[in-house]
Length: 559
Image 1 (cartoon, rainbow, N blue to C red):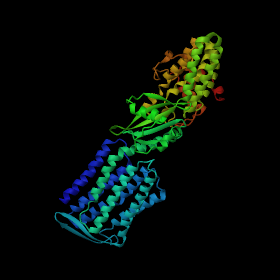
Image 2: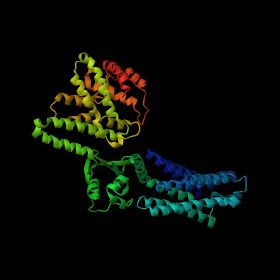
Image 3: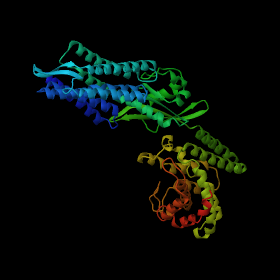
Image 4: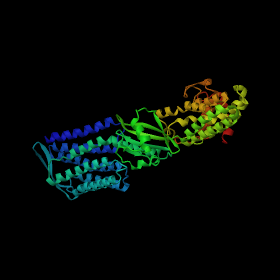
């Protein structure tokens, strides 16, 4: 019976580990190490009770010590992570080194008498066990267990002190489980039992971690979000679990809604008359799961877009909610200005035309500056590309007859150039500010800025009587990422299907991207950039326009 029970415990430990790996795409390495140690411990105890001779029993005993030495160590590391505490490197190496030393002493069993003086093999009542007399260095193992118990007590006190800002319930439950295992170890030593139930205790520990791992993942995810957005000065977020219990929020949102500082982790939000409850919590409670549903929240004189995202993990479709606050004050002010201005325009079109054009030029430049300030990757890009287009247009004046346009057209292209990336206003900061290359899904979102730019330009230029310029500016924003070979976006136009103003803009846009340093690449030299442009004629760029662009080499190097 004892052999069968130990086999069942071992089989359950392996099954629980496999089940966890199968249902989670992202696996926590500390949990995996802990679970492996428990599996080894359970295997060692099964091997021990089923041993046929002394040598096999000694090796089984060594196996169970591997788990016994390192499972408590990984438990401490898990506790440190839950408490958001970084263990000092010296202490970390000391604990690892101490566990390794104890395991090294265990490996001397059967050869030296420093850990076990004598070992006697007994087989009775259908199972095997060892009768041991301890050597002088065996005391290091209970000292190690005591050391880990003290560390756990320290973390328990730390959790009590910070119970508002971390999951006190998880920390306490994990500590209690560990103390129970240590108590079982002491009890076995006191009553000198030949049958060990420590594996059962470790198994309960695995069950506990599996039960709470999804929740722990929410805290880890929250920490990752903080790291990703801590440099974003106008972004707030708050995280709740699937039962609407508070998990975490960043400093920006806590400053925006000071009542968040009084919320307790793992607790539901108490109903109140606060702006936070009415503006945020009631929106969360009434949210129907629509991904694009947003709410505008006004705090003082600032406007925020409030959006909810479902947090999923592994095969669980919903483990919590992420509520994001994006500062849209500038955009709202611009759009309100445009709206008010259009109303005025209907009344005073003829008298105010000159002022209208001046204000709209200022708005375009202002929105261009706003795009620049939001985009980590393209600082100064709009201003530089405008300067490049101006140089290119000056050269193109010599070829008006060849292409069938006049100088007024080229002036319009120069005037429209700052508008080419206005669509980035509609792109989420999380994507726009990403310090690296995009995933396929993120790039698909980023590509939407071309169509959004055309829409924004059309709205901005409402009331401008020059319909030709309005259409030209829309084309610059909409089609400057199209390629001569038809492999661009958003519509896959090719050759002369692409408006010529967009083909002009494409050369300036790509050239600046090549010679500028981005977070994902170093800047190319001017010679390398001109070589790439030349090699791309007839593929990416209009071959005739591209040849003329290459004639601007000397002037472009002075920008």
